[in-house]
Each structure stands twice: as C-alpha cells, then as structure tokens.
Length: 636
Image (tube, rainbow, N blue to C red; front, side, top):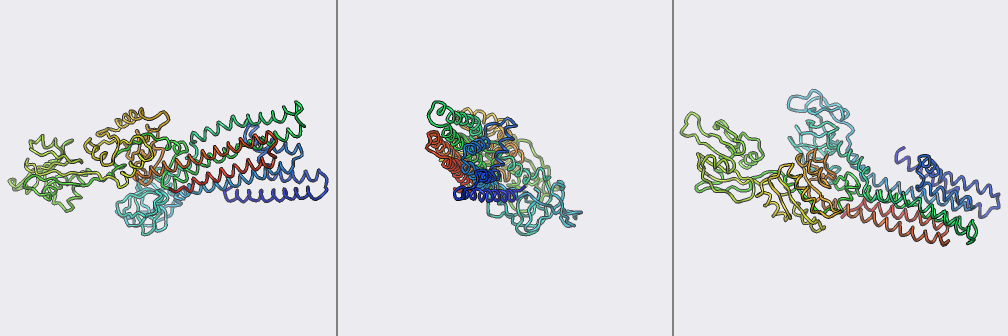
C-alpha cells in the first residue's frame, strides 16, 4: 500500500472509530440501555481504533518482545475495560491513533524532502542506434537506462533528465542541477563538457557519449546513499532504544506495585489502586521519545539533502557536532584545481611575450596541466613543423629545437622546466621566490625568464575557514602533495593553523593519524577531499567529507558526507543543520521526560485521571513530533 492509500485508510479508521465512540458516550449519558449493549458499542470502537495495536502486541509477544509501547497500551486499555472505564479505554486508543496520524504526516513530509532527490531517477534514455561517425545523428529509441553501455550515444531533449553520466559531443544547453547540488542557478554545458545524470535539460538538444553504466552513475550512487541513510543510527537514537528497553519493564513493575501494595495493606479499595496503576501505565508510554528522536535525525538528513549535502546516516550527522579538527586537501578542495599563468618574470633584454612564446613552443607536444596552462595563456597557433628533437626529461622538464632544419645555424635549443633542468645544463639563472609552480625558460643555454603557474583559491575557501573558527573548531589543517612553498602561500592566505606539503597519499593517512592524537576524548577529526588519492585518508578520518560535484567516485564512496556543490563553505551549512538537529532532539528528550515524570507522580498519587493521562501521553508526543518537523524546514 502506498502512502496515499495508507493515509486514506488511517483517516477512515479515525472517522469511523470517533463516530462510534461519540455515539457510545451519548448513549451512555442519555439512554437507559442494557450495560451489555453499551459495552458492545465501546468494544466496537475499541477494535476499530486499537485492534492493530493489540495485534502488534500479541505478535511481538510471540517473538519474545514483551515490553514495548503496544504492550503498554494494550495492557492499560484492557485493564480499563475490566474496571468499567469503557470511555477512557477507547479514548486512549483514539488519541493514540491521532498521534500516529500526525506522526505519519511528519514522516511523509520528511521523506518528501528526501524524495526530491529520488525524483532524479531517470525513466528512460534515448539511445541513438547506428550514429554517424563523430556525431549523434541517427535513429533514437527509448530504452531502460540500465541497458545502456559505456560508449553508447544518447540524446537528451529539453525538459528531460540526463539518464547517465557522459560527455557532450554535440549541442549546448542550460542544466537544472537543483536536485543534485541544491543550487537554483542553471549551469551551461557545451561540447566536451562532462554532464552528470539527474540534471534536467532546460533547453537545447544534447548528444552525449556515455562514460558510466547506470549502476556506476551519479544518480544511482545518490539514490543508494539516500535509501540507506536512515539505517545508520546516531548515538542518541541508540541511547533512546537502550533507554526504552530498560524503562518499559521498570514502569510496568512500578504500575504493578501501585496497583497491589497499597490495597494489600488497607490503604483503599482495590479498584481505586488498580485504576491508578493503569493511569500510570498510560502515562509511561515512551511514544514521544521513540517517535520524535528518529524523526528529528531523519528530518536533519532530509533538510541537508535540500541544501545539496548528502549525509549517509544519523551517526554522521551527530558526529558533525563534535568536530575538533578539520583537515583539508588542497587541490580541488580549497583551490579550483585549474592551473593558470599568474606571473612571468623576465631576464634582462627579454620581454614577457618572448618568454611565454618560447615556453609555449617547448610545451606544445605535452598534455600535462602545466603545459596546457602555458598554451592557454599564449592563446595562438604554433607552427609545430619548426620544432624538432623534442625530449621530455623525467623530473626535470622539456628540451626542444626550433628553427629551419636545413639551416642548422638558425636553430635554437629551448629548455623549459624546473631548477634541476637549468642546473644540469649549466644555465645560470635567478631563482624565483614567488609561490607557485615555476617553469624556468632558457634559449641556447641563456636564461630568459620564469613563468609562475598557480592553482586559484576558491572564492569561498577563506569564508569557510573563518566560519569554522567562529564555530569553535580548534584546528584547521591543510595536507597537499604540492611543494611546501605553495602550501605555505595558500595556508597563509586562508589563515590555516597548520599545513603540510609534498605528501604522498599514504603520508596523508599517517599525518591524519598523528593529528587524531590531538583531539579531545569525544572530539572528531574530519577530512575533506575530492580526488581518488584522497579515498584512503577519507576512510581513515572519523568523518570523511567528499567534494561531490567534481569529486572522484572513490572519494564519494569512501566519504560519510558528500558536499554536492564543491564549495568548502557547504561544510558550515552541514554543521549548522547538525547543530539545529541536536538541539531539537534534546529539547524533545528533556520535554518528554520532564512532562512524563510530573504526570507519573500525579498518577501514582491519584491526582491525574485516565483522561489526563491520555492527554499527557498523546499531547507530549504531538508537540515533540511538531518540534521535530522544524528540522526539515531549517533555513539559516
């Protein structure tokens, strides 16, 4: 049965049970009918409203699960019938069902906030059969995305979801990435851009070459994360489960003592003390706790998903509240991972344009990111027919000859690389002090200048670090494989507490293990990274956080939290949502136990009737549920 049908069924039960219950009260007050008839009316209402509760109690009893809320409700209401409190017995079940109805509404609302992510599941893919070479031209047929293979060509029309990850080979369009990233601003894509499944094509027709099967695609991974998020309970949830396991038998034992001991020693009639014991049982039901606590964490996970933050379980949401140390990878996390020429230093009698042109000629055959950044900065076509004797010298750089090969006297040898290349070739050069990757350039062993290439810091990285410190994070650290000088420049710019450069992947793990020794007894260490080489350290940290939008599959698999927009500042939102969830959950715990404690005392001394017990139990549960739903609509 789906949620809609289940809701209608619940409303019908409430309506039918309420009508018969009210009819029973009216008949009991106004008509002098046989007690058996009046009992039959209330029993009918009881079966409609509480039959499922009694059946669940019996089923749990057969499994050895004696003490739960179903057992308490059944015991208290059947006892109320035995002592002649028919209306009170039915009222307990009526208000319990009202509480369940509001709980279902709250859970449905929470699931809806997460199911917005589930809407990214594609229904079909337009598979292009027999495409023309180099394009997507051909007949397109609708197929199940699971049947599409890597290398196949698919067509995505305006208004359709992108069914699989791939590369655009034809067309331009604006993509709605809201379901993946939480961002409302569309993203423009063109030929050679990578597109992720789950995005919606707003305009234009895209021809896409599939790069991942459905099972490995972004949409499948996100759906799997969301579906399994609620299975990992937070410590607070586990505490409540353990608490209820001991709490329920204790209150049943106390109710039995209240019903038996006083009348046994002549402190009043048996019926009066039995009624007090039953009232005590009704009040003691831990409904507010067992309903609202998991709902609070579920709502927190749903609220985070609406912001483009995927949390893989309530335990990880709670761990965000305990961060002492936050460790960042550099490239792709704090920086954009896009290398650009940021400065050109010239030797005497040489210009920046000449230095850049010679460097571009040297790098013209390379696909290395450093080479591509120099070629992009040069921005003009190169005559590669003038180049010869191209050599890549491992760990040093490049050597190439330029000029007319038939006129050897005009040939020039260009060297472009690090300081080792200059030293090995006996070139006298001035070492650059500026932070960044340095490409020294020499022509015929004469040093002509140095090109500085830097990875640009993300716009919100500085705000993210400042925000973490304002939240009370004790230490912010950066680990990178880049050289120490580059690491220092980024760390100083962002005001990080510590930095470590020139680290290999296994050395990052070792450094995280060392840093873990500095956290408090209950504190947590989080590592944020995006690359495939970050997977080991993400798994080793107390809390692994992946930059999901451009991050590698391995990083996302190893992480506990995924920031879908690649913005470090999203971590601040994640911590804020986790903090708000914690406050709501503990408000409910304190409120529920406080009110119940008060009414348990009143019930034991005969100062609370069965009606007041019902309102205490159901009222506390309803208020706790309504409080928990606030997490879903949290907006800082």
